[in-house]
Amino acid sequence: MPADYGPPKTIYNRFIRWSRLGVFDKILAALSAKGGKPDQSMIDATHLKAHHTAASVLKKGLFPDVSDAPKAV
Image (cartoon, rainbow, N blue to C red):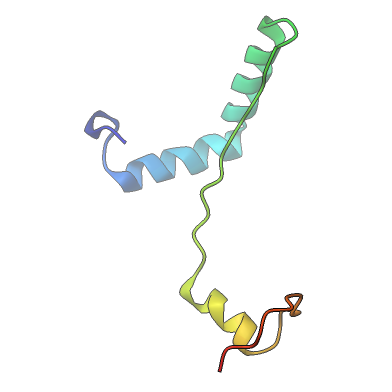
């Protein structure tokens, strides 16, 4: 993010507050109402950070094994 938006914690807090208030839903609804039928539409928010303990799920056998690959030793 550009430094003009402030520190990362401020940006995060603002995002959470606006999400809870429905600001992004209102923006999307207003933009959708203004336009005609789009040729293309895409909204992408694919940023996911897994906790480091998420990898232990496989080791503990809590996630089913669906692969035919040989098992690591």
